Each structure stands twice: as C-alpha cells, then as structure tokens.
Length: 428
Image (cartoon, rainbow, N blue to C red; front, side, top):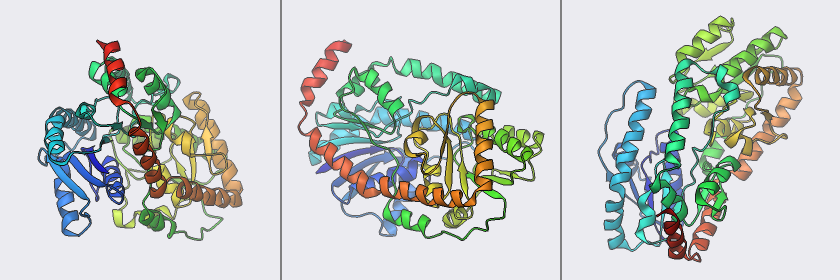
C-alpha cells in the first residue's frame, strides 16, 4: 500500500516522540511505500540517517518548516513544541493534497505527536484515515495533588481546562468521527475517545510503543549477575514533571529507609520539577541514597540499565511509559501506579501496580513492596525475568505491524464517506 504519514517528530537519534516517530515509519516502510510529512526540526537527523544508509527506498520525506532551537527551560520548550505542532497542522493539509495528487495514496495516518488535542486534517483527503495510536486523555487524580509543587499544580489545572476546551472543538469532534480507526494505548483513552466519537466502534486498543528487534537484543544482552547483598538499585527516567510521581517515590524511600530497607534511587533525567524534588530529597534526608538529574550517555544506556533491579515510577498521568518498558526489557521489576498506560502492560506476575488512593497511602504501599523485594532477592530475579519476557513477547515490531496490517485491511471495508456524512450532520 501507499501510505501518507504525518509525523512532526521523526528522529532516529532522538528520544521520546522523535524516536517513536522514526520507529513507526521505518517499521511500516518494511511492508509499505511510506511518504512522511515531518517537521523541520527532524531535518538534520534524517539527513544524517540518509548519509548512513538508514533510510530505505520505500521511505520518503517532505519537511514543513526548518530547524529552530528550543528554549533551555524545559517547560517553555514544551509550550514552544505545542505552538509548532499547531502551525504544522495548519499547513499539513495543503502539502498532503499536493503529494496525494502526485502519488494517489491508499491511506493516511497520523503518527506524532501522539495526542488527540490537536485535530489532524488528513481525514479531509477522501481516503481512509487512521488517527494514531494517540493518547493524552489521562487525568491527574485530585487525591494526589498534595504531591505536586505549586508550578506543577497550576500546570495540571491549566491542562484540565484545556481538555474541556479541546473536547468541544469542532475540528477535534469532526476528526474523531471521521477517522476509520483510532488506536489507543489503554482503556481510559478508549472510554474518553469513544465518548467523543459517539460510539466505541473503530476505537481499538494498541499500545503506541513497541521495540524493534535490534533494540530488544541490545537491552536483553546486558544482563548482569547482581550481588544479592547490596542495596536495591531503583531507576526512573522521563521528563521530570509533577505527573511522574517521583515525589511519591521519594516519600516511599524515606519510609522504607525507616524500616531498614537499603535502596538507592537514580532519576536519570531533568525537567521543571527537578529543583522541587532536590529540595524534597534533602528535607527527607535522602541525599546519600537519591541521585536526581543524572544523565546516562546514549551509548551506555543499555549497560547502565543492567545495573538496576527496579524501575520505580508511579506516574499519575502517563499514556505510554517508554522508560518503564525499556527498564523492564533490561530485567527491572516495575513499580507503577495502577493508572492508565503503565497499568496496561505491567501485570502482577512481572511487577507491582499500586492503587491510586492518595499520595501518603501510595508511598506506604511502595515502601512495603521495597521491603518485600529487599528481603526476597529470588522474587526480584523471578519477576525481573518475567518483566523482560512481558515486553519482548507483547510489544515488538512484528506485533505492531501485524496489528496495523489488519487495521489497514479493515479500513478498506468501511463506508468512510457514509460515516463522515452522519458525523457531520450531527455537528452542524
């Protein structure tokens, strides 16, 4: 098939949305002719990939915009990325129509950003349209507001307001109803988008992160024999925002320490909450056990992961959880909140899902789990192996491609224009 793909972030050497966009389009190009419209910020990396022979002839790119630096403040940079995404979306349809007139695509698909909040115009091309996988529907639980800094609290309130506004956007409502299929990573997103669509038909579960075979092999090959009598080593990563639940994890480590548990906690990233978390760590007397803002070089990341026992990230608003999945592939036992994305891929066999009650009770439960794992290192090893197997077996490239192939075939059997006409009349 000829696929037109919209992926503002597409960076084979990047992280987060960038590497995800690249993994998706490069995987699809193994079975289809893929024509990708991406943002100008992806241009340098894709030119480098072209020079290194990484881009096959079945994968072609066009750019909207040019590379521009982001503000060094991570929060401001995030707002910048949203503004660029909005502008990208406004200019997307014209570029897509021109390319479609030349190539006659069979299907269009939105890849990145993985959010429902900005409607894609690609449904207007008159061919089947796949919106996603997308998420961004997650809601931070009010019972855990006490774990947030003032800045993070204001951000969550602002986001909730924006959710209300976006859900009433005519462009979003038309897009959600016109899409042939909307893949989503968890049941909360399924429920939310089914409500916007007016029916669950066409809203399908598909986790948006998967791992190419080379990445699986890279992470799996780093298993080490871990000294059973050393302190537990816990890992976390991802942009340090209040939603990640690191403040709750610090409270849990404080409680575990009081109970005699030996645990080290390494948070290998930065973000707007870094200063707040550093102050909290010092207040709790954890400076000798907790390292915040530590960065691992990309070339050493897999090796570094192999030194950890646990991935501790009780995120309270996470659609995917890439860093958790990577750590699981390296044999780390996950401790996550039983909430949205991570709750879908972590099972009781391979890890722990902590009920979302309030920050205090969650910290108490995490401390109990740390105590259990500290005392039973065989359990730690058993669950670590099962965590690796869980991701390797269920979130690989082949499964993603098989899912998409099925979706594409089913899209061709949908009376696309009939459903859009119905949705349009309801919205007029």
